[in-house]
Image (cartoon, rainbow, N blue to C red; front, side, top):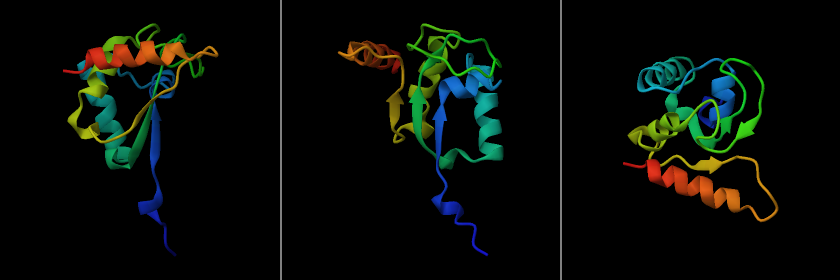
Amino acid sequence: MTTHEERIGICLDTCHVFVAGYDIRTPETYHTTMAEFDRIIGLERIKVFHFNDTDKAFGSRSDRHAHIGKGQIGLEAFRLFVNDPRFTNVPMIIETPKEKEMLEDIENLAVLRGLQA
């Protein structure tokens, strides 16, 4: 029986990770979480990111997206992601609340670009 493991890819959603109880807010907790992810799933399986902050508490298991840096996760986690050389070629999608004009995407993108080293 073939498992087709080469066909499995992951979308890592920052809100989902955080509210599931994996801390990404400091360099230490980010590296611990990513090492655990690599051990269990494999970083090479990350094919895309959904970037979003959250209004909900760490480990709350409640999926409520917020704008980048405006919630419980904060800016440091996003700084770590956008500057992690392992993810240079991995697409990163802004998945935050939007109004009809979608101006929030422009604002969130500016925040993320401002975090790049």
